[in-house]
Figure 1: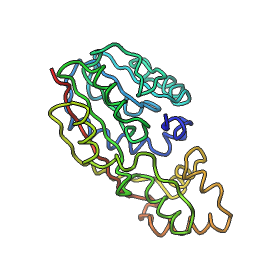
Figure 2: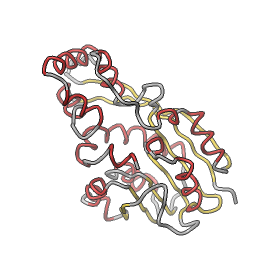
Figure 3: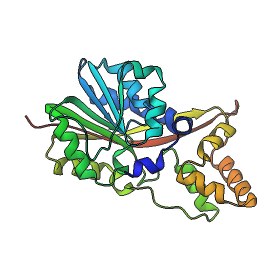
Length: 262
């Protein structure tokens, strides 16, 4: 699963994207409005940031969270939320659970990274109970509205070569709706989620975005010192600091929810 090659360092992931996951996830959960006391499955849980939100906001009866990255799961298991959630290594395309085992099956910021998305959705539907909720949200990579879009734009500006984000075409609302419709789900609804996050200062932003565990970070690491300094100048101009030195910018996620036919 491509997600495993993208997110291998749990601590680095949280520094880079954890604050964005929380911001979008809070809005997403309010919109999904899941019932209290439900049996939850979090697919592609990473370091457990979204799992924590579910435990905090939704009072699940049980909470299971899976991810193909052993490093991410190891990090998640070291957090306090592991006392209330069962973190396991598993692939979204072949879930190790019985049919109809969960009332809510959710995926936060992962669907586009799964190589076989129809197969993953079929698995989500299989383990969801009749009438159960299936839902997810992804960054709008197609429109370059993700939290990493500014650094990607800056890299392009200085002439760096960037690979496309996996599954970016399926990060659009229409594609998510089509995926769920072809998966045989009912009562499908979609929405955009716009979030704005403030980062303490440029150094915090740069450390997070240039971490060498991700594609953009690897590109930055390959730059000459001159090009790296050009990129820093470009990013300072694109994301000017406020009076307190903080950097504030926005991102957009696309969300979808539906129900398993009864």
